[in-house]
Image (cartoon, rainbow, N blue to C red; front, side):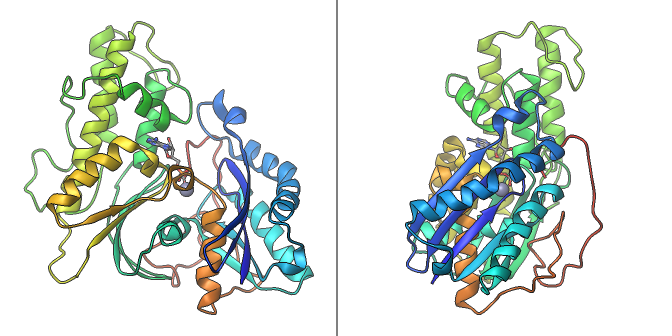
Length: 368
Ligand code: KG4
Ligand code: ZN
C-alpha cells in the first residue's frame, strides 16, 4: 500500500510518498523561512499564497522521484488541522481533488498525530508510549494508546515551548525560526550563569499543577535579565542594542537548561504506577534540539525509560509524517469523507469527538 501525504499547515509546503513497509519513496519540500524572516514570524496570508504557488510542482516532483504515477497511489492524505487555516485548505483541497479524480480514499490527518506517530516509522515502536509533544504551537504530555486514541496528561497554559524559543531569539535579535538559533548560541554559553524562575514549579508543592506547563513567565524572566544587563527597555518589536555575544550565549544556555528542568519536573509527575510504560517519545520541532534530547536521555535512564526521537529532519514539519499517518490509518480501514472540514484547532486528546471549531484569523502568528 502506498500513500501520498501533503503538509501545508504552517510555513513548509511538503509532499511525500511512503509505503506500508516503511520506505520513504520520496519527499519534496519547500521551506518558506526566507519569506517570513523579515516579519519575525509566519504571516498566514503570505504562507497560504506560497503553498498555492508551489504545491502542484511538489506533487509532480514527489511522483517523479518515487518513479510512480498517480494511479500507483492507494490513498491521498493531507494535514487537515490544526494549523493556519488558509494553508490547511490549500493542502486538503489538493488531496481531496486527487482522491476524487483517481477514485481513491482521502485521509484527513491531524498534524499533531502525524508528529506523534513519526517515531513508529523510524523505530520499532509499539503502543502504548508516553509522548512529549513540543512544537511551535503545542507543549503537551500525552499517553499514546493507539491510532486515534490519546489521553492528554498535561499541557501548557500559555506559550508553547517552540514559541518560547522563538520569542527569546527575537528578544536577542537572532533570526527566525528561533529554536535552532538559540540552540546554536547556547553551545558556547554557560548554562549556570542565570537562574530563571520555573513557572508552576518554584513556590508550588510538587504535585500542584502536575503535568501542566507555563513558559510565559520564563520568557518574561529572560526579558528582565536582558533589560538588567543592558539598561534598556525594549518593546515586543525592538531588540536591545547593547547586548554582547557572551551575554547572548549565556542567556540562551541558561534558558535552555531551565526549559529542560521544567520538562523533566513535569514528566516526573506522570503517574506511571498503573501503566507499563517503558518508552518516552519526543516529537515536534523542538525535539530536533540535541541538548534537550541528551538531557532527557540522561534523565530517562534514571527513570527506567527509553527516549526515542525521530531523526532531526523528521522532527520539524514535513510530509513524510503525514503520509505515514495515512498508512497507519489505511491499515486500520480509517478514511474520511470528501466533505471533511478543515480545522484551525484540533485537539489530540479527543481526536474523534472534537466538534468543528469556528474559523479564526490573525495577522501575524509565530506558529499555529
Ligand atoms: O513542529 P514544527 O516544525 O511546527 C509546528 O508544528 O509548530 O515546530 C516548529 C518549532 C519552532 O518554534 C522552532 O523554533 C522550533 O520548533 N525548533 C526548535 C529547534 N528546531 C525547531 N526549537 C529548539 N531547538 C531546535 N533545534
Ligand atoms: Zn508541526
